[in-house]
Length: 164
Image 1 (spheres, rainbow, N blue to C red):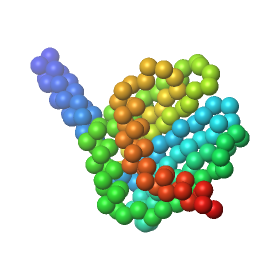
Image 2: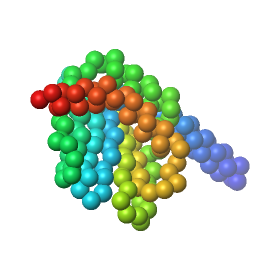
Image 3: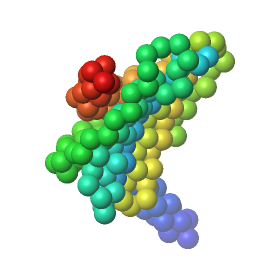
Image 4: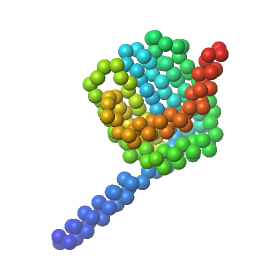
């Protein structure tokens, strides 16, 4: 009886580890990153919306609610499905899904809150946010990876807003 219990426990344990080691199931349908400044410094975010029944698009919003700086940037761009797959592969390769649930909320003044968020067609969601010091290197790397992906649209949105 003890051997049977041990075998069942090990089998469940290994299958649980196997599932944890794999990335999310399904296709990436949403990805965003954001940075919110304290004391009215506004919020910047970019999001990829790639629902299965729509044309994928990137939305760039910079300076939302900023009481002290440049005018708000709010632009939307159509994106090829290949770009969505490219981002999904980057996220999986860099195991960004392992950050799900990561949260740091340090009591400090004047910092910025950072967030990365993803959704998949399987219903799985990955959410990580931090505000403080001593942030995991994996979180900083994931944020930089996602920011680099959105960089061309962010640059274009800024140029378009300045020329208006």
